[in-house]
Image (cartoon, rainbow, N blue to C red; front, side, top):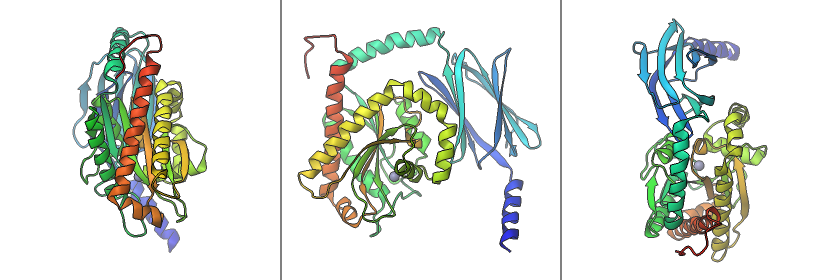
Length: 383
Ligand SMILES: [Zn+2]
């Protein structure tokens, strides 16, 4: 009977055709991202042809709900996107590109989607212009420091996040901490953008897309931790990187809502992005931001609370941080699975103290950034 059941499930899965619900794209300074929203997880093959330079993907067992579609983009990197029903079971997506350095493709879940990133070539006139104006923006930033911060309270809506032994939900706690943090940063004259400011479901990729499209200077994702070992407690801060550490992978798998096995497989698929990330200065900045927030959190909470465990700064592959173009961190403020920490998280006082500590950590990071990005200029007014 179980065998038959398995066969039936596989059979029905194989029969179910996946459709492409939506096609979207966004242009960033370094790359263009194309996203296909699907109603299931699709297998695909990829290929590249020259004259004209184009990349195409064949999505298997897939149908287009409407007629063939062509979208003109013409942003210097991506000319157009064409989608067509290649045969009864295959949809072909063709990206006509222009002077690109490389591209990467990966799938994400919940909701299912295929993400294609196309990186600008080096010989772009546009890119040269960008880097000049970027230098100017940086100079301005020295005067005004960091202007815009995105606060990302984890989970929300149909996704409660981790739930404590007394029923406290991660999504409610992190929303409150996030809002408090927002108030504190606004008082400091920083513009704050929330990925959600109420109990609402926001897909993981949309969260960094909000940050990128609003050209935010920092991205702060707030979560509570959970462990099957109820005794585990403490605070830790993450930045995005490839990881071999089993505990870090576990945390990332939970936040990404995938299995640990899948996490490991995913890391392989994303290795190109992560290699790019390793060369990217944002990684060093993210690391510095993570250390600043983590140490402020641990040190300030220790003054009023006992048993504040410093689990340190770690790195892992968090979906929500993939593609962020600014320094970005994910803070696990405490363990909701630990009875004592759950009790603390349920109080205003503890949440306020954490929000204050994160704000102070960001502040410390910003004041040090000002010194570091402008080491040659002396006699600049401080403030
Ligand atoms: Zn979480």
